Image (cartoon, one colour):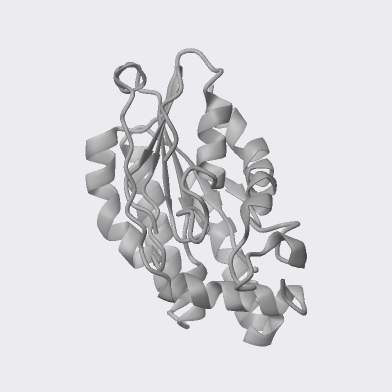
Length: 234
C-alpha cells in the first residue's frame, strides 16, 4: 500500500491470464478466482471525503483484489489516483476478496453500506458463480439484491459484467451474459458488459501463472470501467 494522496484516499477493506487462447485463459482465470487466497490490506480513511459523502465502494473478487500484484498497483488503486484530482475529494474503499461469489457479496454488503455510506458502488462479482456451476437464477437474485440494497442506501451502482467461454454451452453463456443486463435494467443500475474486454485474449497481459492479469493489464481494466463510471461521479 502506497502513501495517502491529497484529495483521494484508498482503503483496502478486504483483498481477495499468457494463454494459448483467450477462451482458455478466461476459464483458468475463473478457476483461480474460486481458489485464490484472500490478501488482507491496510488503508487510511479520508475524513473529508467521508464527511462529504464522496465514498466509492468496490465489491469484487480477485480481479479487483490485487491477486499476485504489488500492493497498490491494481486497477482500483489506479482509480483512486485518478480521483485524487477531483474536488471535493473521493475516498475509494476496496472490499474485494479472492474467491468471492455473489452469495458472499450479498452477505457482506449491508455492513459495508452501513460502515462506509458510499455514494457509488461498483459490483464486480459473478465469475465464480459460473465456474462453480451455480444456479444462474440465484446469481441474478444475488446481484439484484446487492444492487437494490445499494440504491436504497442512496448509492449509484455500476455492475461489471463477465463472460464465460463457449465450452460452457451456448445456452449457459448467453444466459450468464444476459443476467447482468437483466439486473441493470430492472434495478436501474449502470452496466459495463464485459470487464475483461481487450484483456482476456492478450497473453502479454497475464502473470507468469498464465491465469491472473498482470500489472500491465490494470490500466486497460480501468479504461474499460471509466466511461461507465464517470457519469456516476457527478
